[in-house]
Length: 605
Image (cartoon, rainbow, N blue to C red; front, side, top):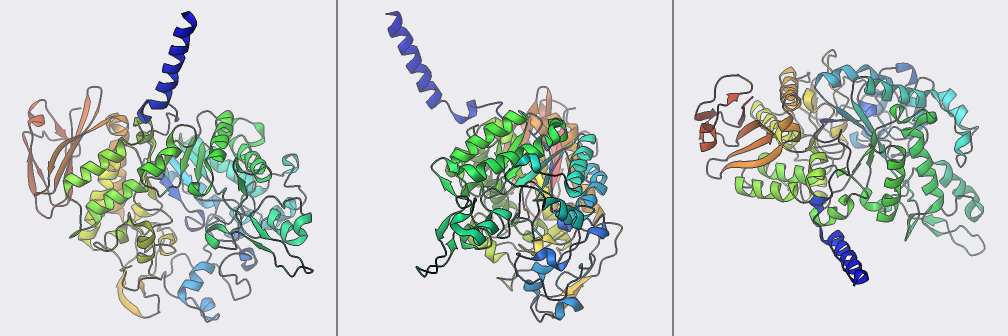
């Protein structure tokens, strides 16, 4: 009987383990990342802190458009984006060819120099797009994972010479270049400011010029790296066969790492694990000296078994590390990644899709009811622990700038990722408006940002959004950062080198202050950062939406007016206790007026 009871209990436990909702998987993510504000940095375009390390044309070898012989100069930081400079005109190619060759000289010293600026916004955490050695401006075609790009450090030539003496398969031979050490200094400086920093891991593929693939190209089946890549055919003069392999999405400059049923195969897997340790616990000095987590590129193109093993490895190094994935999947396909054994969160494009449909679109906008329903479905899809950690973004290095999205309403739906991606590229859509937003369009951007900062989760924005930067999709979303102490040329050139009316390019202090104001509110009120979320009012006709954020006795009420008319808001909730306007500090009363395309935030504290 005792044995039967034990067996029954065991079966019950197994059934519960397999039927409990995702929401029960709490506290699997670190606490520090819940509700934080993220700032995404694209290093090559953020700040040139050390002109002595600026890249040379030879550093582009292996990167599209595969031209390291045409005239080349470091591009003027403050120049008109679409204007071909004299050195570019000499190659006879169009603007889109030349945009890929441009280098502005952004580096890690530049990021270090500007940490005070980032912190002044109230930001808690920084996501760095790839910084590892690579010939491109974006660095998603890594030559290795264990070294920072030499042109991001103070002595590129010496760094390259140092690296040539090591064995990539033997971590004990890996040197610490000056660029590597500067990355450690960046981490240290971020931590000094009580902020966090994560690096970008691109573990599906490497750049074609990486050490392992070049050895395969040279030695073919005799290479010690022959099992690292998806080789389709070996070079064999006797058989008349040519060397062929799989590249990510068919791109031959991005050879894919080989996978089997257990995930990425042993050779590259061990190399990735060794590189992971290097940046999380550098020199074995302790995790306090390493990065605080990772963002994983094209996570959907790496098998689940690898991510499960890698998470165990990461958490064995630092139990408080944060892992976020690049996924552009609907809820049902996203869920397997967020069960607590792979990732803590994603770059929450699904949030951006919902926001875009409601705020960006005009004649085709979703109703308030639809907006609320979709947010609720997404918010509850993976459990509270995940919801608080989701990186709620509106744009990134792979999407049109928010300031340009609001200029182009009623086009393709952002949620239709593939079609929208091409439609929002000026190179693919000549009718896409890539000019500066009007005042009314800026107000729409402000309303979107306000909601983003007041919503549940971890808001993230792309460098320069707060400064007023605009631009169509890649590559136009990657302009050099707009700094208040620089004088920029007005934008007058179209891609075909015709001209339009001048758009003044200047740091937008008013917009910066708006971001700072709402981030500050988030940091001041823990109910906004970590509290519950409940819908308070929905009015489709008036386009009015209100919700509450609560934590303990603290409560914040947010009233959104999406319409083009001023509205008054009344609700029984306003009569239950005294609320004040958190910006004007005046008593709210039982009726609250909200201007067109604006927001009012009330609090009981």
